[in-house]
Amino acid sequence: MASSEQALPAFVRLAAHTLRWRLLTELAAGDLRVRELTTLVGAPQNLVSYHLRLLRDGGLVTSTRSSRDRRDSYYRLNLDRCAQALAGAGAALHPALRGVPEPPAPPRWPRLSVLFACTGNSARSPIAEALLRHHTAGRVTVTSAGSRPAARVHPHAVRVLREQYGIDIADRRPRHLDTLRGRRFDYVVTLCDKVREACPEFGDHARRIHWSTPDPAAAGRSEQDIHAALCRAAADIDTRVRYLLPVLAQTPEAHS
Image 1: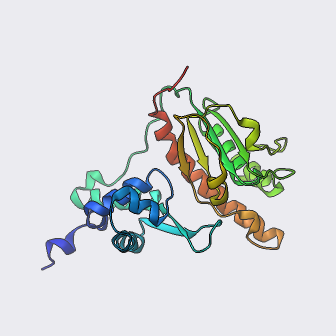
Image 2 (image 1 turned 60 degrees about the vertical axis):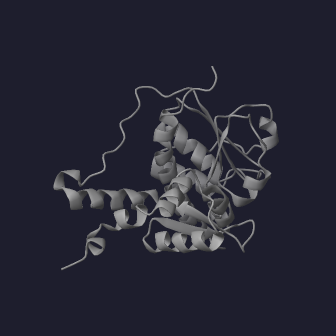
Image 3 (image 1 turned 180 degrees about the horizontal axis):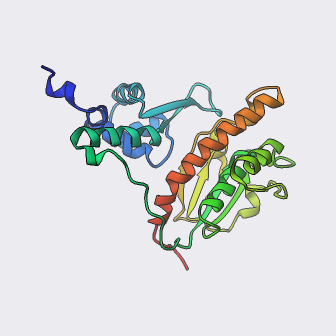
């Protein structure tokens, strides 16, 4: 007969540990490095690394090398896998608990402003800007900028958004973060490890979130490779944006 420990659903077995739950909740707010997690949870680095490995083995957490320092890594919560594992745990308890319901659309969006930033403001951040504006029907103020803006938005980013999401950003031009100094944002989301270190402050109340997203334009030499990488990046950013929506919907308006 299986022991009670072996019979536990995977999500329960992994998430029920106090330190692992702390790591999951910290990563729910954005991507973080081991040393940052160590400080946040108040545990030794070797212990944090051990439990992160268990979460990675269970598929709840993934990691990517930092584009700023290849010796470092960012850890990320796999929200899709968490949702599936949570649904599986519910089904193990009772068939009626099999599904995880989609959050209802808010009756109204709070008046919020969101900034997305990456280095060139040519692919990752304009994709995120366009997708958030699309998902909120323009009811959330969204912009994007870069620390070293490119001359134009990447043509494959324009193509991917048009073909896969029905969004046209052909007329958009990259802008520098410095042009936004003095503006206040409720959320500042960095999609590039390099720009995370260079992004200025935009108001004391701004919530900072980091999505460690490799530069899709650097994925290969051929146009086909770059297009495929931008398709993957757009899908990944779209997932992150959709999980951000309930967070935005529950955010109190900080200013009129």
